[in-house]
Amino acid sequence: MELMKIVTYPLFFLYRIWFYALMAIPILVMFPFLLLSTLKQAWYPAFFKLARIWATFILYGMGLIPKIERGERYQKGESYMFVSNHTSMTDIMLMLYVTKNPFVFVGKKELSKIPLFGFFYKRSCILVDRNNPRSRKEVFDSAQRRLNQGLSICIFPEGGVPDDTTIVLDTFKDGAFRLAIEHQIHIAPIVFHDNKKRFSYQFFSGYPGRLRVKTLSFIATKGKTLDDKRAINKQTRGVILQELEHPSV
Image (cartoon, rainbow, N blue to C red; front, side):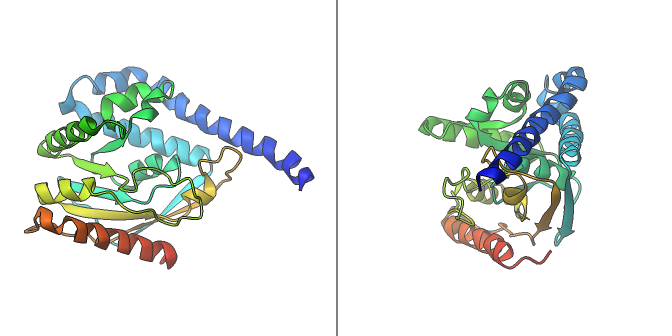
């Protein structure tokens, strides 16, 4: 066991450092264009296209090859509430890779502290401070403005990555479903099968391979009210959990 650690830990370390290098390289190369595209909210679609290039560069540079099976196709110009299970830092990149529909992440404020990445993260995403109740109201206001601009929203409804790595799918918070109901937009569930295995939050872990993705059928909110919020939450979590436990890809 000790010999295995001596052999593998340096490789895990190098693989992790390579990930951070890949995050930085395209940001440095595209910095003027990224900065320009964040100066006005109306220019966000241009920023989104650059972000997809950034994400693709990282995934393929890490040897993480997406394999997407589309159970549902996203229509150009439509707004969606994208939701997925959350187990890895690569979830952000893979979500950007999956769809061309411009969306805005709702994400934790702590990521804005990451050097270079955080500079653009806080200018392009909706940040939530989970320790500040007022922050939640600000998140809803910001998300509503973006939806009114014709963009989509992406929320990882688990609200974070569970410390217990044996948890397949944590309970879902209601924010994503409340917003989807208020704006009468489809919920678009997406399942990431391999991100935890390929690149978890544990530092000494990770290796190249396939990243299986399944886009599930839309969950409609038209005609629903906030009284249906918990039922839609349960339905969405149920279809994602079903795919995780019984993969179709």
